Image (cartoon, rainbow, N blue to C red):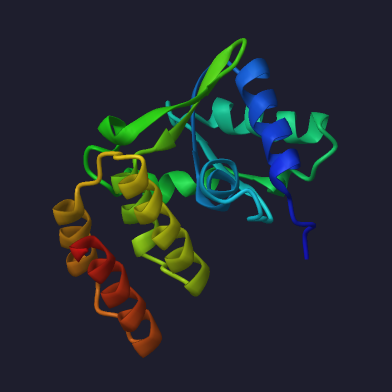
Length: 175
C-alpha cells in the first residue's frame, strides 16, 4: 500500500508541476479535494493529466515525481480516460495554479461531479456533497441538469449501494 499524501505534500507536487513543466495540466480527484474542498482529505496519488494528451507529458510528469523522491505511481495520468469521455470537458476547467512554466487547472463543479459519478464510491459521494455545498456557498456555476443527465445515462449499477449513492447525488442537485 502506498503512503497517503496530505495537503502539504499535494501542494508541493502541484507547485512543482506548475513550475517545472510547460503546458496545461488538469488536477482532479482526491488531491483536488484536499486543496480546494477539505484540507483534511488525504489521497494515495494525484490524478493529474497533461491537457495535450501526449506521451511526452506523461513521462515528464513521472520525472517530476521521481525528482521529488516519490514513486512514479504517486502521479496518475490514467485519469485522462475518464476526462476524455465527457463531451466539452475543455470548457469545464479553470486555473488553480499558475506556475513559472505551466498552469494547473481544476474542473468546474459540473465537471467534478460528472467525473465522480461514474465510480461514485462512498468517498466520492462525500466529495460530491462537499462540492455541491461549496458551489452553493460561493455561488459557483453548477449545471445540475447536465450532471443529472450524465448520471441517468450511466449504465445501470448491479450494486444496490451504488444505485442509492447515485440517487443521493441527484437529490443533492434538487435542493
